[in-house]
Amino acid sequence: MPIFEYRCEDCGQRFDAFFRRADEAEEKQVTCSECGSDKVRKLFSVIGLGGSERSFSNDSCSTRST
Image 1: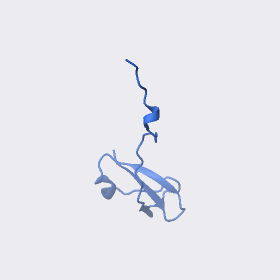
Image 2 (image 1 turned 90 degrees about the vertical axis):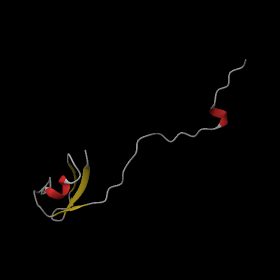
Image 3 (image 1 turned 180 degrees about the vertical axis):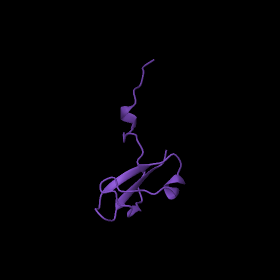
């Protein structure tokens, strides 16, 4: 499900809009969630990826004595 971020030209509110398909973002009229204005601009969004930033080293590996 594509999510697009918009900014209202009238009130400055930033908001997200959800669509079933990416092409719906171009087909449907998006209005501001705060003031209802149709003067909105699609913003470039940064994609965030989940995960952790773990540092792996030889010291962190466990060894088993045989």
